[in-house]
Image (cartoon, rainbow, N blue to C red; front, side):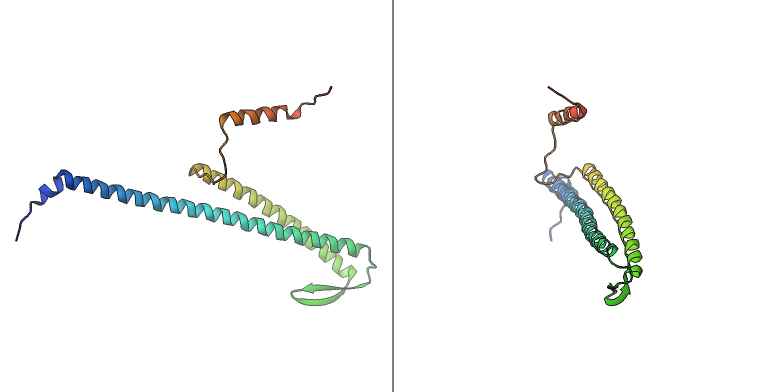
Length: 165
């Protein structure tokens, strides 16, 4: 049985180099996991933003339909029979019963749209802050140079000037 001097093995230049390589590899693995976590959080924020946009589009279509129906029913006799789909059941009503309900629904949809728009704006700001905090750049998105920024500022300054010949 051979005995090794453990202290000489761990203090030798060869062993310390492999230990440093091991430390570097574990740090790189930690960095990779941290980057994956950041990318995952960023993707989650973008998915939430997409969901808000989809909800907003659905609400806007519903609002347009409500406005069309309300405009149509305003020109009709209030005692005329109409049908309304409530929870999958077609119900017979009169125009004078349905019109106030539709108007109330339209107002509710408009309020909901404004809330979703605010949420969408907040989510966009949150995403931009997250991008800045973690130095995230999206492919195809170029960062403006100082020269481009100054050119844009000059354009904004000249925006309110009327020039005539």
